[in-house]
Length: 282
Image (cartoon, rainbow, N blue to C red):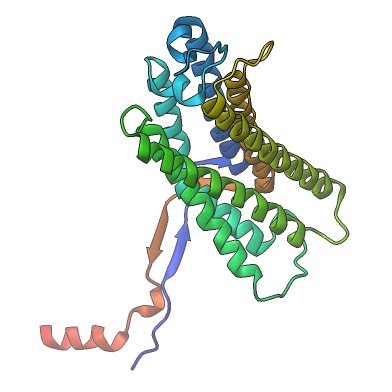
């Protein structure tokens, strides 16, 4: 019996190649651009509609839900941008960052052998997928259409987002070179700062939200609901900043589109079978 030889995989020249870091940075600009655009349009075109409160106290900034979910073209801009943003973030980037921490790319040195590193890395991977899924749900189900579902999606998004930031900082510290290089140290500090600022901003937004609903008080120079909206804005911007810093992990990684051809090795041709065919012809 002739020996079986493995197939030969031939990879052709790439049709195109794009740095993964550039893709990640572009994906960060989509929600940033759409968020700023929606708030500005709401302030210019729909100020009264988006800044009114249930108890008629003064307010000068629209909440994010009011800015993106109640009027056109804000709703269209936000939904298109988030759709373009989320699907690559779900299909591509979670696995890329998971492999980065597993393989310690970009010159990182892996020193940790504890059993809980892999579960943490996998949990970080799952959290990012759920975060983006909740963002899609929160975007396409507005508070006007289904308030309960919108609220549940928002809670899931924030829990997963804040947990992802925390785990990502832990994994960055655990897989960094020892001692940390100047670049690793700078990136780690920026991620930690963005995470802490995000936590603080969200805490302030929650405080002002409940204070407004409980007391419905005018705040003087800065109204309470305006401070709530400002806290929301800072939460979104710090979230984008954190993912912007995470894109630096992909430095040197390239996404390539190419053809792969599975060619049978010439040694797979068996002379015995050829001879048998010749005998049948005779």
